[in-house]
Image 1: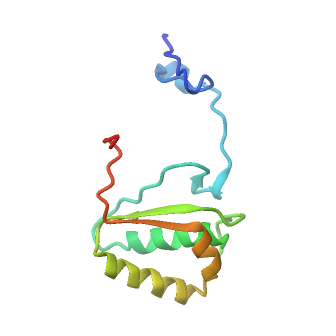
Image 2: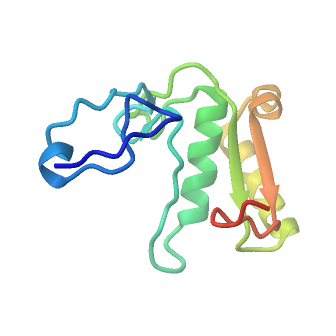
Length: 130
């Protein structure tokens, strides 16, 4: 079974055959949201239209930025910086929803201002280095 080394991350090879993959001792990252997202993971929520994906993501990002437990069930820990990339509705509509959610949750505006960043309508692509 050939394992292709990753020069940037020697502890994690690029290519692993199945037999090696299922037994490989990957480092276990810390949780960002306990039981849901590991620290430094890239997260994307996918579901049918009108299933509240945007509201869920806004809520999750606000919880991470403020250190607030999600749904009073999932620990978040210390407030951290998080970036919300939004490209599916107008900027003004999204802005209005963010303000309504933050007010409705009684969020600490100073913590959100320090830790929650937005990328709005920039057509972000992860397959294009530009």
